[in-house]
Structure formats: structure tokens, C-alpha cells
Image 1 (cartoon, rainbow, N blue to C red):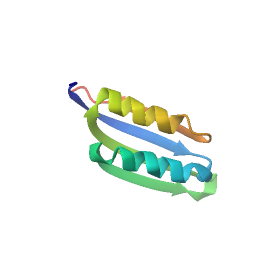
Image 2: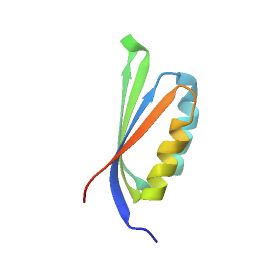
Image 3: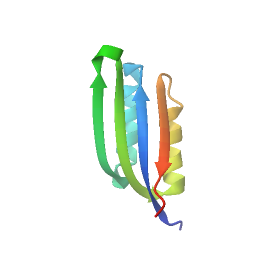
Image 4: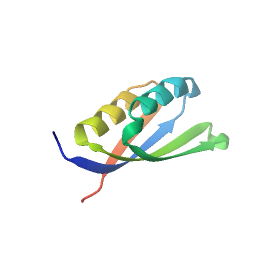
Length: 82
């Protein structure tokens, strides 16, 4: 079993039709999510979601990859050095 890592995942959504799939993925990995903040930026027609995750690196990569492969969505993870 791999050691947990702390990561911040940034998600930028430019196609709101992906929202249901994003929420499904976040629910599936909910046990690892410590915090979530969503900001709709209506003037630019995008939404920004920030996550703080405590999980094995493989799970963080799975989640950010699954979300980042959705059309109209970008996701990147930054890992803490702890």
C-alpha cells in the first residue's frame, strides 16, 4: 500500500455540460477530498474548482486524469513536499 500524499488539484471548466461527470468523479473519490471550493467566473464563462486531497499518489493521478480528459475541462495537481 502506498503512502498518502497531500495535493492541491485545480480544475478549470469551460464547458458546463461536463459538470455532471465532474461531480460523479469527485463523489467517487470523496473519501480522499479534504476540502473543495468552487468559483463561477460568469464574466469569462468558466468555473474554477480547487480541491485539497490526502490520498495515495495513484488515486490523485487517477482523479485528475479522469477529470482532465473531459471535453472542456483542464485539471492539474500540485503535490506538497511533506
